[in-house]
Amino acid sequence: LFLLDPLERRVKQLLQLSHTGAVTAMAVHPEPQMKLLATAGAQDATIRFWDVNEHQPVVGRVLKFEEDQSGIFSLAFHSSGRLLACGFGDGQLQLLSFPALKPVPGGRRWAGAERLAALCFLDDMLAVGSWDQTVYIFSSSSSSKSPLRLLKGNTSSVTHMQCSAEGTYLMTNSKDGQVLYFNVLSGERVTQETVKNCSWKDWSCPMAWHTMGMWAAQRHFGISGIKCCRAFHAVTGEALLAAGDVSHQITLFHFPSLSGKQGFHRYDGHGGFVSCMATLPGADPTTAAALLTLGGDDGALLQWRLVSRAVAARAWHEEERQPQQAMRLREGTKAAAPRRRPPWDFEDAEEEALKGRGAARGPWVQHGGTDLP
Image (cartoon, rainbow, N blue to C red; front, side):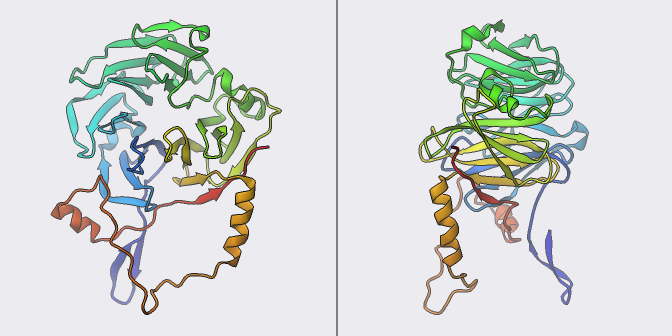
């Protein structure tokens, strides 16, 4: 989106950058001070980076891949923040160094010949969930292109994965609603009894015993009706579960959600189905400062903030009493301090030239929720 000057017949400013087509993947950098996330498109085969502090795209940091790779359907950062994994629609896997965004030795690998729908780092290993019903385990610390082992047993395409906090177990969801558990070190399937007391690193699987209440409260949805979910600890001290569905809504439950009668809240914001979710770490790494949701069809990236009912009501009334701020500085007002260079920024002439074109605000909308009863 450009701002044009019809009299001078020139482009005055670049107002907006975005993907073309459906946006299908998102990953947040693990370092809280970075406040950086990446999004990927299934049709344009590009990866874009977004500055959460500034609420705008990072200009000059766009990766464009060949469109014959069938788009990008999964992204994941390593816990160190130094590796970015990208899963393509044709079974290709790319490992990139960060922030250089250059392929690492042996970084181009193949995991079957179908869509790679889920990625999960487990210390020095990378689990890759494919639509060919197989989970491929690769080494992320070596240049070997062959998988360490294959995890089989799913009767349909793998759609979601999550790993245990200690990196030993892996949970998978598939298209037909199957839930399986694996020991990643041995490659064997394990029972639910084995992992019942296991703590999970990032809960993102819609189908499990912990989410039965989410499905019971939305009986009108089929297996593919709920596209994504995310469990997190809010700054209010509650354990919550957010779900995104095909009706463009965000639904908020307590976690674990074991009964459809426990109550929930719904929020509107997207113009199409919600493709994926992520949380931004707060000052306390165990809590989430905000929830990020990505719309598949509308391409909108929304940021949600959770506050108590009392705080939300007070903020609403205070906002009405606040006078509107002028866009220009009044006489005697000091100008704002120069913006600090973000950690991922490079000091070179090419980047300075790109910044000179101007960067506008990204497609962000902030929402204030309410606490659950």
